[in-house]
Image 1 (cartoon, rainbow, N blue to C red):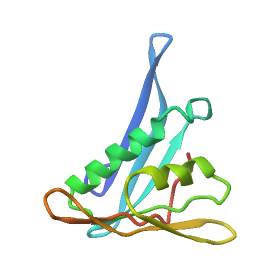
Image 2 (cartoon, rainbow, N blue to C red; image 1 turned 135 degrees about the vertical axis):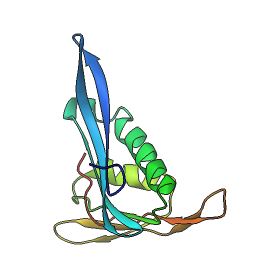
Image 3 (tube, rainbow, N blue to C red; image 1 turned 45 degrees about the vertical axis):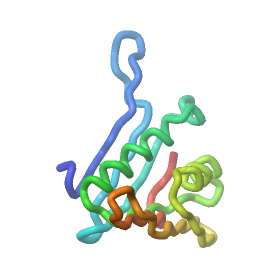
Length: 126
């Protein structure tokens, strides 16, 4: 992890006086302006907005780093993660295959006029 080519974010909870990691998000550069992202949230904490918060922050870091495309691959039966990608505020189109859902995100302008795209074919499991 160098916070340039490999970025990792974690969600923690104070549990019995100790910090416990209950979720994580990461991206790894695959090309100069593209990265593959992945998410995970401990089962008992899913459905509480942790994945959404991690996604917002990870996309923010990616945009701040100048990335124009993120990708992820989602298992077809991972409905909550597919819904999270749909709700993250970026246009989404999907292509289903037997072993994965490839979700492609189209370009979206930011306030500064810079273009951004998030393309989801490789890594969301949480």
